[in-house]
Image 1 (cartoon, rainbow, N blue to C red):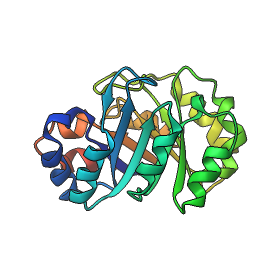
Image 2 (image 1 turned 30 degrees about the vertical axis):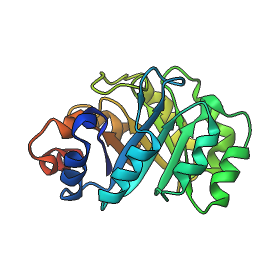
Image 3 (image 1 turned 90 degrees about the vertical axis):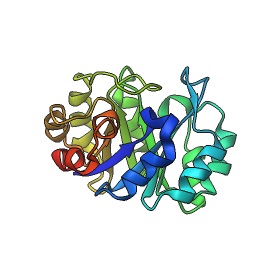
Image 4 (image 1 turned 60 degrees about the vertical axis):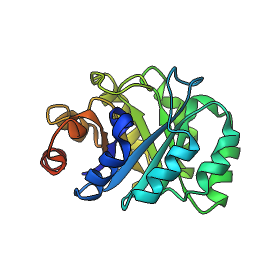
Length: 206
């Protein structure tokens, strides 16, 4: 299991948190960009993500919770390992094709209440699908178990090389549901960052 560490709850102590992730066995650093429109919160503007990128030694797993697609061009210049945006805000393949044309890996995120069939047309053209197991926009929420069966349905028809990830309420208890669902990667925030020892928590998930 690959682990991507979300530093959303450490927004007031970002650089310190990034350095702790650097020293850990995490596979990725997960950064949630919020525009205050697609979700209520507004965090991780471009200048902040640039600061994170300058400090991080981990690959960046960038999650864009935005309505305005024009910002993608600037964030893409930071060359994240994955640049993920929401299926709820696209109508065709144009944005996927654009990000791929930049040589970047594309992820599509899907909210808990969205019909999982909405993502099916795109499965062969993306590198990662991110299932939200909480309502996007805030850390520390409880895991929505109804997402598990949605993931299992998609996993059965997805290309074998598609990374299936899950984000929200992932901890040492819900990790078993994530594994049962067939996830290849988990995004975990407060479970890891509330700890004084990131590696202990990461190893519990792996």
